[in-house]
Image (cartoon, rainbow, N blue to C red; front, side, top):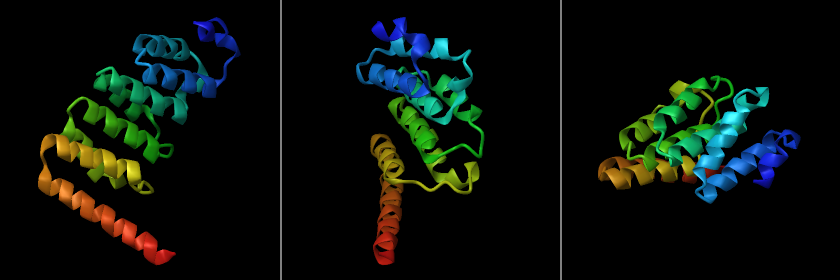
Length: 154
């Protein structure tokens, strides 16, 4: 409530943190209210805000809005944090096939995208929940191979 009284004084980082706090506290209506206020502002369309909004709508079960926000991200701005947020939104809403398709097709979204530890964890979680044992084992093998390559470089 105090946050909303001083709304005009906050910058985009404050808004991102406020929405993250609302998600953690499961106060989704307050987070969505903040989003509605931000929509008219130019800085609402930045990559940090888009990632946290994908996370918000994934937690509220509104995968369609999360996906709309994800698709609004310019290809050159897309990063692994955004992809992970969308993958997690899918998993939270039992859309395991969509999550795994996004994981498998990272390079088609942006040639510079590489899955990180979070990406692998979300993909393995999707496999576990969907009982895709072989696909989960393949992802684990890919993760192990990636880890071994990093160890050899050092």
